[in-house]
Image (cartoon, rainbow, N blue to C red; front, side, top):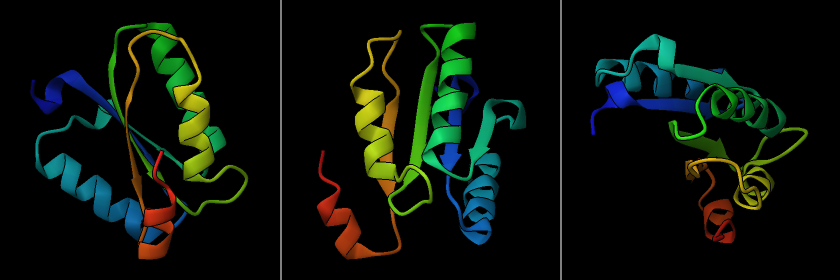
Length: 106
């Protein structure tokens, strides 16, 4: 499977980290049309819902910042995993804070 077959959601509230992720993903072949960004977990879930409504079997990877406003990455991951809609997305919780990452074991 190549990045051409995948949709990616980057949920990150820090613009610098969002730009780094976008740059890396695009430089490795991800099409800009398959990339969505979110500033919090609520937006990430809205993007996921939209993608799964278009194609319930879409291959989706979601990068979730552990510390975001409104709905953090850990809670977003829990809510996504509790759903029974289509092909489950691959979830990656990310943080610049190592203590947060160890606490985010799902």
